Amino acid sequence: MSIIELNRYFQVDTTTFQSKGIVIFDFNDAKSEEFIENYIIPFRQSYISDEDLDYEVNNGINIRKDAIENKLPTLPNLKSGEFGEILIFFLASIFICPDANIAPVKWQWKEHRDAPCHLTDIMFMKCTNDTMPQPTDYVCSIEVKAAATPIGPKSKKSKMNDAIKDAYKDKESRIGKMIAYLTTKYAKERNARMAKLVKRFDDATTVHFNRHINAAIVVEKDSISYHINNVLEECLAQAQKDRIALFAVPIKQLKQMYERLYSITPIKG
Image 1 (cartoon, rainbow, N blue to C red):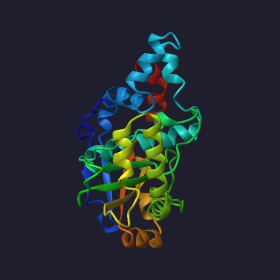
Image 2 (cartoon, rainbow, N blue to C red):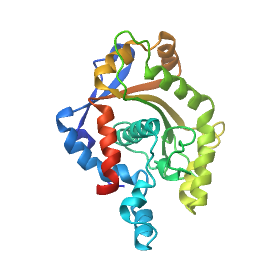
Image 3 (cartoon, rainbow, N blue to C red):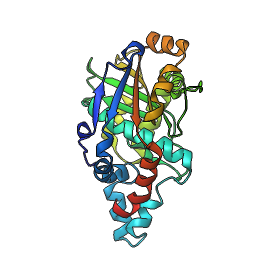
């Protein structure tokens, strides 16, 4: 996939909400247009690879625009949610798991454009040799919640509460299911190497590996303080107890950004 220099657009802020243990990926709103233009190709590749796109076009199955458009969701809630997931996927690949060598682009595997993805939102893994596990091998899971609709000071809502609760589900059960799912997917693609690398993680009792559990939100920038202030104490306690790392991405005019991206990707992707 194409690489986008996210550090041109996002800065890591560990101080603003340090008291709640939340790291902010602070977006430079002044570079919004530039970001969208540079993000179109990586965003499109999250839904359909260059190879699959070329196959459809070169074999007369679809013109390029239609081949791309057929992969993108049409439902507003899916657009918002998947924009958030894909953005966190790219941010994590740079800032959280830069050494991962297994990074499934699961949006390419959707059965239908308006069907949600299965199980854990995002998973990265590090394993270089499936027959010789290393103590540095890890699984990193990330649950993502997005909210483009602004909330005000009277609201009691917080997407972070939802993200923490689902991250806990990952820790308790979904990581194991996700490993089985990914192994099957890679095997079906006749990618034996990746299938074996993933399968290395299916036995956590006899073969040690590290687990990094994360929860992230992507929300309208004007509402970020309300989402953070409304995080329940029991959720923060759960995150601390289970070592769930917390991240937030506030973006000004978030809804306009993802709507524009989805509209121009079939044309420019």
